[in-house]
Structure formats: structure tokens, C-alpha cells
Length: 165
Image (tube, rainbow, N blue to C red):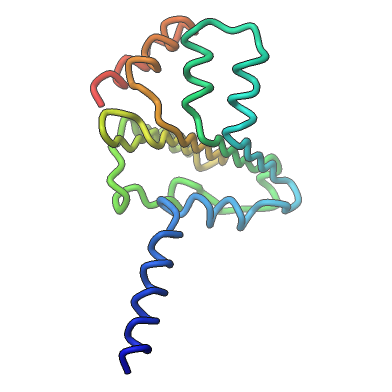
């Protein structure tokens, strides 16, 4: 009986360690390889390599070195997947995400959310659903002020809210 309880405890702990945030991986693997879908996953070592090789500013290199992975999923041929809306398939409330922006207009839904730990951004998520479906999930240990500096370099004034995380 003790072995059974210990085995169940070990299995349940193992399953929680492999739980993925907000169903991103489930959604990614559900559509990956399907016709009319583009799925791209870039591991962190490729980012670090690009940061070392490319001619970038200090802030840009620091950002690339802080990334663990970037995952992009987009449905190019919406006609093959009627009724799909990525924003309805993602659950951000259960994984302690802070909602940074939410827009619902003319059949399009846009959600940008982030998860922070110890003063660093761990996850940044951009989900677009409706007429077009796009999922971008960036994992890493990014400083929020670094993102704000890069937004200034890129001319994106709307990212000033990352400093508040």
C-alpha cells in the first residue's frame, strides 16, 4: 500500500512539472503540421547564437541572450478552420498572467499578457483570434526596463507599460 501511495505521489508531482502554461503547447501541437498552418519554434540557443553573431546594439543582444524560446503559430488558410479563435482556446487566468492589453473589435480579438517572477518577465504572450489566428509565446528571463528601452529603439511607444510589471 505504501508503494502504491508513493508511486501515485511521484506520478502526480511529475505531471504537474510538465504542465504547460495556459494550454499553449497543447494548441501548438494540435495545429502543428496541419495544412494551412505555420508553426515555428525557436530554441534559446539559436537566439544566443544570433546575438553573438549579428551586428546588434547592446540592448538587442541582451534581449536575445535572455530568451529561452519563441513559439509562433498562425493559421494562414482560415477557410480550412472555420470557427477557430485562439483567444477562446487560451486560459490566462489560471497561470498568474497579468493582462497588459485586451482589444475586441470587428471580429478580431487581441490579448497581450505577461507573467513575472522575481522582477523579470518569464512569459510574454500575444494571442490574436477571430478572422486571423496568431499565437506568439516568448519565454525567458527578460528585464522589463530592457523591453521598454528596445521599444524606444524600435519606435513602439505602446510598450511603456512593461516597466510597471
